Length: 179
Image (tube, rainbow, N blue to C red; front, side):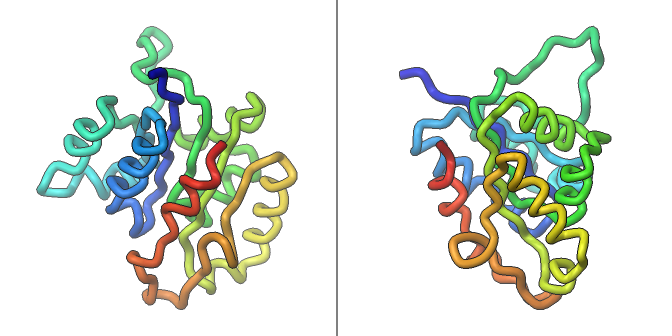
């Protein structure tokens, strides 16, 4: 059976510590998952004494990427059929909507829009961050570009600062939203 390739792009938010959940769920749905982390998310995983990067590599069968490769280097990941950005932080949201691609993660998702790839984004931020006017503008921009952003009733609901519930993060809603 040929698996479709899913890029799981994770930002530095608490759910990034549980990437095994969406990886296993996506694999059960027939996806071959490749993990790409923002530099901050990579730093979180790399400092994990239990070897989070190694565990993610073993779980997916692919190296975890977080930086751009050199032009002379071969691509180590197959091209994606779809992209899931989860958890998506307000920082990455706003850079993405502005077309900034100063990290591998941002480069892939800004390019993904232009390539017409299906992209699902599952945010994770608090209600104080959500209140910033740039957030609603960025959501509107990305939705107009065809990105599915799962926010609200059938996605992520912002929480009070320092009161998030990792067990309530709706990973399955994101997997179910993939084509």
